[in-house]
Structure formats: structure tokens, C-alpha cells
Length: 275
Ligand SMILES: C[S@@+](CC[C@H](N)C(=O)[O-])C[C@H]1O[C@@H](n2cnc3c(N)ncnc32)[C@H](O)[C@@H]1O
Image 1 (cartoon, rainbow, N blue to C red):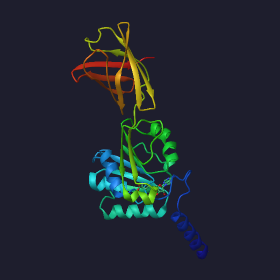
Image 2 (cartoon, rainbow, N blue to C red):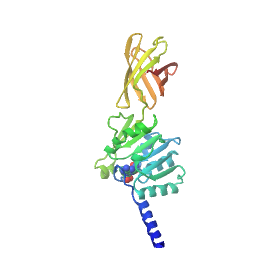
Image 3 (tube, rainbow, N blue to C red):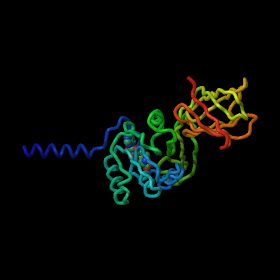
């Protein structure tokens, strides 16, 4: 009986020490060079207010650097038992275990809604499989930083390319890319607009279209005229545009079914989503 209990205990311990079998292997363990980690974090503008989640966290270097250098909190999700252990031990030694942790889990099944920043260095097809998850789980304004591989069809809010000798042994070339995306709100639709009197005293109709998730276009119909929005931009929940023949920039914050905005930071305008 005792022997059986010991055998069962050994089997359970062995099972716990095993790597997880994920729904999909998102790539082998290849750590981002530390200089790329620093660039990714600076690019995302990490602060102590941020909660960073690294998908496929390896030895935890991205989350650990975010915590030690920028004071952020967060977690890393990783399938390899030894890497999860190594990352948690390193965090303990660095005195940041109260702010970061590493969990053995499948990144496809992990709830990432707490993130203000998501980072990843994963295979290109995996990065693209995550797009729906990002739109469903992440709050508008959350930054996504991807090392080397873009989200196809999403216009990056920013990107950077550099040459690094140490990347030759990883990808065969020195080229290194970092992509930054800011999760946008959904603004597509027809909005009843109340523009500043200088534009019109009559209610207008603002039509916004959202191509490629982060790229928008639109028109404003006022006083029987249709004006195409100039240079419309959407970054998270912040919308900006200009109107032809009118001076100044319109800015606005989209919340639920309303936009509250200012023309040149002085004159208010607003819009509500039509039925
Ligand atoms: C290229 S490494 C990146 C490590 C780290 N993020 C960095 O940039 O240094 C990718 C990591 O993802 C892990 N991984 C692969 N598929 C995964 C999955 N489905 N769930 C969680 N982790 C996964 C691998 O074990 C590997 O450690």
C-alpha cells in the first residue's frame, strides 16, 4: 500500500514537471536579444502603471526587464516547465516576485484581458492566429508589441527596423523588426454629429469606415454637402481628423456609443452612434 502511494506520488510529480502539450506550438525557445527587449519596452512606452503579458515568455526576460527597469507588473505564459521555473526563480532573486509571475499554460487559452501591453516573439502564423483573441479580450488602447512578425492586415501604429549581428544565428539575417499596434475601438457606422457652429449649426451625419482594423476613412454630411475627412486617425479610443476648407484639427474620445471631442482643443463637438 505504502509502495503504491509512493509510486502514485512519483507519477504525479513527474506529470507536473512535464512540459504542457499546447493546442498549437507557437515556436521553439529562442530568446529575444536583450537589446531588442529594451527596444520593445521603450517602444511600448512602458511605465509603472502598466500590466505586461508576454505570450511564450521563455526565461521571462521581457516581463522581468519591464518590472526591474520600468516598475511594471505582469506575467508570462509558457509551456516549458524548466523555463517557467527559471523565470520565477530569477524574478525572486531580482526582488520582483511580488509584481511578476510566470505560469505554465497554453497562451491560446490564457485570459489576457488584464494586459495594458502584450508582447510576443512567436512564429508568424501564430501571431496572426491571435488577432481575434486580441480584439475580443484586449481593452481599446492596449499596446501590442511584436518582435519580427507583423499582424497581417493591421496597419502598425509604429514600426522599427534595425540590424543586429546576433540575429544571424537565429534567423540567418541581421534584420530585426519591431511592430507596435494600439488596439482600436470599433468606430464603424453612422454617427449623429453636433459640430462647432463654425462648421454648421445644423446636426450632421458622420460616417466612419474601418478598414484593416486600425485604418479608418469617413465623411461628414452637413448642410447638404459631403466632406471627406482628411487624415483621419484612430489610436485606441482617440480619433483625429481634419475637414477640407476648415482650419484646425478635430480630436475626440470614443466611449461606448458616443464621441466627445474638441476642435483645436477649444471648441467642443460630439457625436452619438445612430440606430
Ligand atoms: C521565440 S521564444 C520567445 C521567448 C521570449 N518571449 C523572448 O522573447 O525572449 C517562444 C516561446 O514560446 C513558447 N511557446 C510556444 N508555444 C506556446 C504555447 N502554445 N503556449 C505558451 N508558450 C508557448 C516556447 O516554449 C518558447 O519559449
